[in-house]
Image (cartoon, rainbow, N blue to C red; front, top):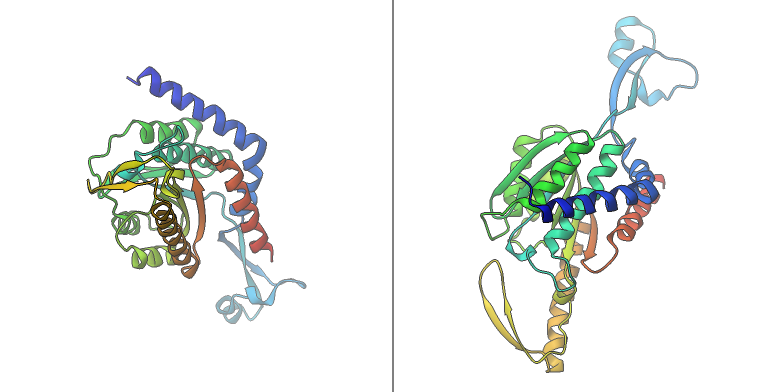
Length: 293
């Protein structure tokens, strides 16, 4: 039985995501992802004007007639959402928790995928694999992804990105588009990320709360790390303390961006109080421009 509050939240995400997909995102999604993959269709005789790079030399040698391999656009893609719901995501200073933003993002992108006849699946993780839903099509399936993200109560508190990427390597043999959604507060995962990116199309979406970037001037604040339980007291009335906090946050974001850039992984940095639909559209358009040129 779904609690009425959860049902209301799911319905709200469905309406918001459906409108965004219909009005804005569907075309952007299609232009970026459709045509990315090609599958073999047939071998046929060479015709004037065919690209000589597609000649099948084995068939040509056997028949003494030039033949080419013909490829067609993949009929469907597999989209897999890897969503970090560790304890650090249960934080929000602007009305929405980071975990809630992650659920909304999944809903939005899942509806875009379903509308384009792609399959969408979900893996929820913390410092362990919490939930796996195999990729399927259909609106009801997209709603299930949203419901399960909102409803699940993870057992783990930490974040193991290496673990979830290794899990994907075991269960997802065919190439897929992976949306890795996290605040990326985790031990070094660079090697697993590089290995995953060689096989799959990885898009990293980092979610940050505004209060994690800059402190308000509010006197003594007691800060608790939800994952480790570590407590720190800061005097936010001190300008140097606020500047130091801001500088450390900026350095961390820069290092994360450099990691993704070094491994040629697309990165969408989101802040919880921003309009993430605008950020997604901006990303899709930039990616499409790179693809064309």
